[in-house]
View 1 (tube, rainbow, N blue to C red):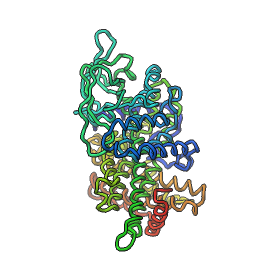
View 2 (view 1 turned 45 degrees about the vertical axis):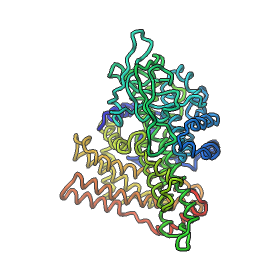
View 3 (view 1 turned 180 degrees about the vertical axis):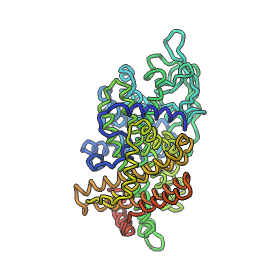
View 4 (view 1 turned 120 degrees about the vertical axis):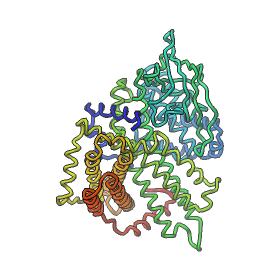
Length: 606
């Protein structure tokens, strides 16, 4: 396992030992179900949230879309102009405290804005990079003087920010960075040397969050400005997609950074880097949901205009099934994103004014598991949906003038950004095992309980989507039992068995997605009645059926990879019996009903 993630997990264990303001800690969904009242959903949005959504949507329609071709042609002056207008509209300051010129909004609002700009491709990358990983290090870890100096300008758009972590030899393994820093003889400046690679917004950024090793050892964060002596840029990279965002190298040759621009403490840069990336993963997930909705919208528009065999493409059964599955996948991603937004707000909502960096770091890491799921599930959702949307466009979707062609290229980077999906998958079960070994969670008790439930008559649930809730519980039981099996079989070799860890992670991801969708739908039905929430009910059934079927395949593969003989036979039988219990009825009719609603609205609705 890369040293980067090992350091992060050790920080998480330290965090778990300290009481927080919540009863449940991050990753608790792996052990026990969430209640309907314990999960934030899009239906819980306040009027203020809806106003922010309208503002962001109008901004995209009025300022970004009319300039899309210029932005795609890398007219970075236009990108900066639009970013300045975003600042004037308050859309750059959602995560900056009011005391420093921002709006100090909650994490739900952050997700709303991220979703709105996510549909814009390169501009959305520039916007989100600025508001998240380029600004949050100062918001949460800066000194009062640093906040006063930089945050008002970052919130207004007067300054644009960049985040410099990746190096030629340090990608996922950020702790192997070669960039160095040393304090000059006068004690007035740190002198930085090294190269940072693939830096978003580099061309037009005014501030750079830079990570370097002080004296070649202590991984540390700094705030650099564009005009600091010794800071220069490499040429613009020629990219596959997101062309409207600038990507360059940042070259540091005896770059002079004043001592007051040390961010946090020497040797504690990893706390800032990884915590900010956690929030970046959540934010990226929100952007992917916004883009996925737009891709579905484009597909619906095209299939309701294009005719073949004297019929609209939208009227064919194969098309209806495709769009129903696309909507179901979006429903799950949207549900888990808002669920996570609620958790993050619980953890961070009262920390805008905190000067306790240690507390801030611990709170930010609490939901690293959920943030990793957001990043993986939502980015892979977007990839699947743009692929199907392009397919529904036929040959025209392959032509550059068609918007879906750009979206297809733009979407691919999201599985690489903010830590590859493979690295994020490694985080999820490893965190569980680390906490268990530290005695912070009663995993053996939970595994024993799960095994006991397999052998006994289960308590049949009642109420809306009872069968789907039982299916979710089955996925959780299989996850827990296989987690125990993996731990028993691999022991100290676990860290070297990445293929097994990733399969266990896939089960955890499917569990979070299915539970988020089902609980959201059940909560809505409980409030508004089943007849008024048929669409959500159908979508939840589709999500559950796909999740249960995929979970069975993944679980069987996992078992086949580490077991043999009778033990394998018994385990596969257990998996098949447990996950094969769920029966989704009348799926074809549900596809048609979902498609009818979507075709009528010409966009994702729920």
